[in-house]
Length: 236
Image (cartoon, rainbow, N blue to C red; front, top):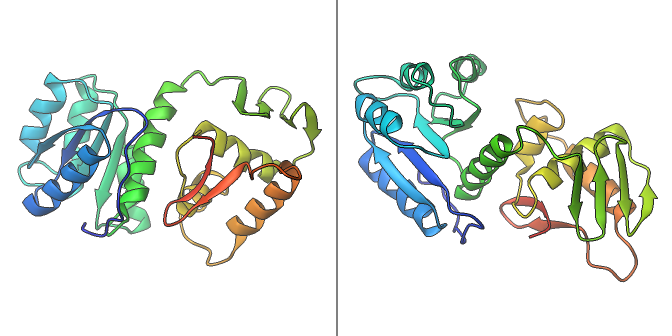
């Protein structure tokens, strides 16, 4: 699990539960997330995590699949049966499609395969927290002069309408739903294109370039920023 890039301070502090039986990995994740501004509790096995999860309120659960005492799937099932509805991110070396499907069907909300960069872990944690907060989504998304009306499906920059193709609309919507937080190429492939694998093409980069060409105005800073090692971000 020690494939992390450097972290930066988070925009909002979250209460996180990390369930990881490898002591060194658990401490590394705890330190990285704490440095990012979050409150982190750690459990080393399934039964301990079950007690913690039932006794405290967490914003996001980060659960390893292979745990002593109770595996991650069983743990999450028990937490869900107890009424714990915090979003759950499975973090595991089990990366086959069947493993991912099992994790999602067990009540998981996202799945991250080891090894991974810390920037992606942080981005997925923030995305899960925002997804929960946006259970009743806003109809108007905005960043500066850019607005996106989700009812009319119309983008505007400084009041001027911007014609977007369906994929460009979904790409912009996802970036705005994660306002101020980088989203990775992998997240875009999954959430915008529905890919659970990397097609090994420049499809994301091509559509980002086309979207920028439609949104950016002469003399103004680009609305979509590239964050090295992390992905793309609007606002923040």
